[in-house]
Length: 307
Image (cartoon, rainbow, N blue to C red):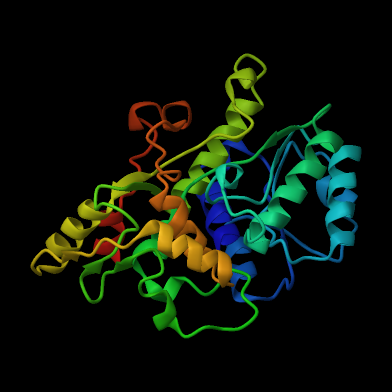
């Protein structure tokens, strides 16, 4: 999961920057929890008093789903305020839904995220830097169907084939179907690079000399890529002919979505891509990782070659 990847980056590459890294988990004896403990994490269960978990903490990174009980969310926010946490990352790590245009049929996940952000900022901003990190789509959600089912808050476990063309990219069948031209670009970022960006933004936001340079809603794009470029990458990596670009009609797709709202959030993301709202050519990559001197952003090609 995203939380696991973020934790592993903090515990390995950025351990010298943070003396203590606490991780909350449902079960202390789960394989993932044991893995993080071996890396040096201080583990806590969700049932613990939240003030104790946050005592003396400078940064809180929220990777909880929107489906957690509202009572726990309120307890979390109050504890952050009481413990004078300096930096808080909202549980975001996706597209910038503030520009969405789905009147009356917005996906419930984004409705909830809007509500959480609106409730959190007035409560915390007088003492805490609240950061809403926008990352685009995870690499694995772009080209791999088997990574899609774990984080979409779906009410049922869908057949993985439903996701094979969810943003118009069917790498297995070498067909690429944007809602518009093949030149449409969209941001996609590896989860490990999201972890690195969180670490860097934390370091910057904690430095009084440069904290003001950290935006409330920073955008990163590990790879701002077009459908045509993904088509070419798939051909190069897999040694197959360049696949077909089958452009589909954005207006018709969106009208159908308005009449038949989907539980699959990536259907909405596909529209956002078609409207060129997920093109993060203008981003905060240089603030986070100047000239890629700290790390090299992972690309879709990097991801496919490791898959």
